[in-house]
Amino acid sequence: MKVAIYPGSFDPVTNGHVDVIERASNLFDKVIVAVIRNPGKKPHFSLSQRVAMLKAALARGNNVVVESFAGLLVDYARKNKADIIVRGLRAVSDFDYEFQMALTNRKMAPKIETLFFMTDYKYSYLSSSFVKQIAKLGGDISELVPKAVANKLKK
Ligand code: PNS
Image (cartoon, rainbow, N blue to C red; front, top):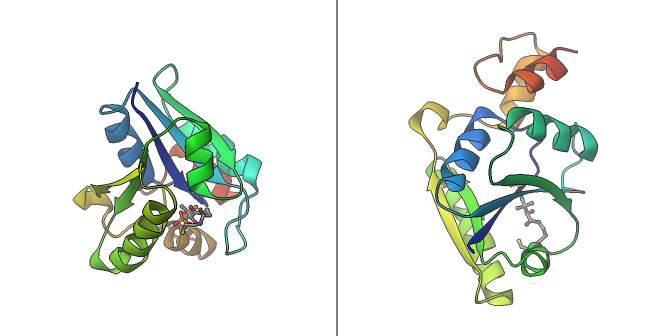
């Protein structure tokens, strides 16, 4: 059974994340969307809000589960018998950070591979930070995030 883990802050989940999750779920037996409990940057949404928005955004009854984790990602992956880490890549600007993270994780856990999904061009510009900024300034985010997130951000 091929289990992949898709980790992130998801603060909040965007349509770009959902696209990566759906594409990964077509390739692997199980995809664990792993929401980091305490990201480096202070999150806008609490852990339970970030998890709830992901659950609301994803289709039910498929091979995707949403969980949370703390500590090292590779430890969490090993515990869940996942040998693939999925990450999305947008522009070149993502590369440095993703490259460093993939190699660091490989150093700690050589048997775990990081696989990158190229973003769909529709989402290549999209980021959780910009979504929050647009919502804060009264802009329309309805085409950028799942409905549950748009409602939450409007509040
Ligand atoms: O959505 P993000 O903020 O880019 O996700 C970053 C995340 C959660 C994948 C990364 O910070 C992470 O894996 N943190 C867990 C701690 C860890 O394993 N650090 C060592 C590898 S860099």
